[in-house]
Length: 85
Image (tube, rainbow, N blue to C red; front, side, top):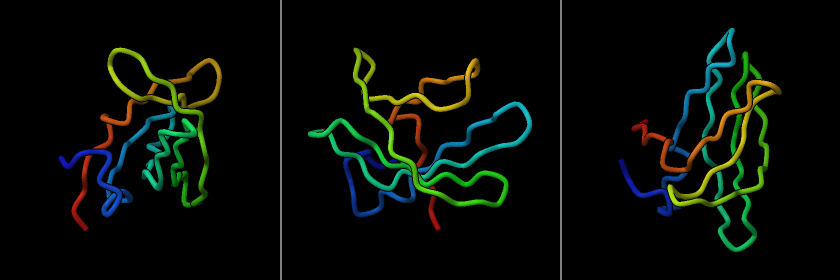
C-alpha cells in the first residue's frame, strides 16, 4: 500500500463500505490537510458522484464520517487500500 499523501495515484486508493444491502465503493480524489477536507468519489448502485467531507484527526490518524444515521462509520484515510488498475 502506498502512502495516502502520494497524490499522483490518489484515485487508486479505494475503500469498500457495506451499507447493510450493497457494497459502496469510495475512491479518494483529494485530501486537503490545511482545510481539513477530503473529497471522495462514491460509487453507489451504479451512480458516481463526488462528495466532500470534514476531515478530523485523533491519535490513530485522519478520518471522516460516512453513512446514514444510525449506521455512521468512522473511516480513516489509512483504511483505503491501493488498487492497481
